[in-house]
Image 1 (cartoon, rainbow, N blue to C red):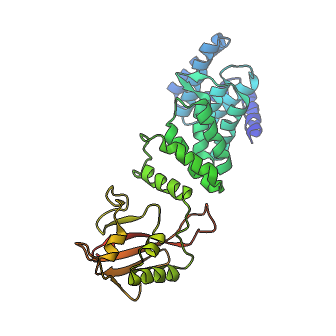
Image 2 (cartoon, rainbow, N blue to C red; image 1 turned 180 degrees about the vertical axis):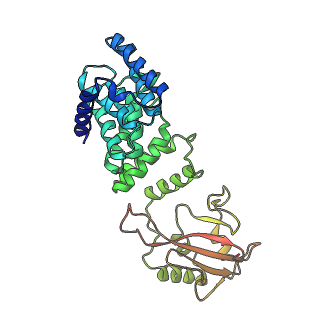
Image 3 (cartoon, one colour; image 1 turned 90 degrees about the vertical axis):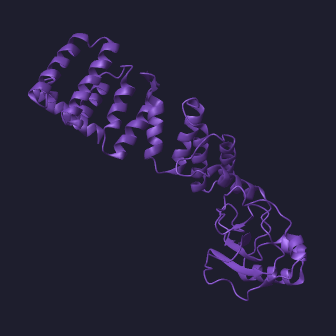
Length: 339
């Protein structure tokens, strides 16, 4: 496709003169373009002057409403003058002004594969190309390569913590769990990083990493079996069984008004002592708002200022371990009557 566009441009240029194809727009714009081409004819051998002139011509073509001619102008120059040290920059301008993501990706990839990096006004052409490729590329395996390139080559230009976070997410897409959690651990070493739209990212990731590192042996395949086991432990005041089936990681105990990531929601307390000092009862059935993802069991009679507790169960969403993915865990307690 690129070759076809360039060939069409050559045919048009040969019919209209070397620069006539690019003299477009209003009469004032045409006059400015003619003057730029005259200056280019006189100063075309000077690399530093030429890059400024080509940039201005490309900008005028865009302003006149001819992005396709701008692209032909720059790609034709690159093909005609393959030794021009600024060719990577010209192709960057072409890629940025394509309304086709596929063609833009083609030029960004071409820049990285075929041209040395250069700095334009303090901005790296390769860094710009990598950043755009990450935005445009859908294949996770390819994005991983770009993340590694950014970390290896442009660590001083990026938010390293954020890069590790999104790299971890991408490894998850690939099902490469060890690599994903290794990247998540690196993300946690950058507490100053903020993930846009996810203010609790560090807390969430820390919980997931802790879960990944845990034994995960408290889950059960059947919700009914788990609930009946806890009912039996409560009835017999069997603290050992009760605690053995409590989630070892990320277990919460809070009021209905609190959020799970509230700083006070995971404070440890002696659950066994409350059980032994109480005569706890429980509902025969789960609450009506229980569903395929989460469930609630009402209990009452606890020796606590709030005597009604709802035991909260949730299905484990953890594809990193297929043996427990989809199991159930006793994940927390809500204090007080349901709202």
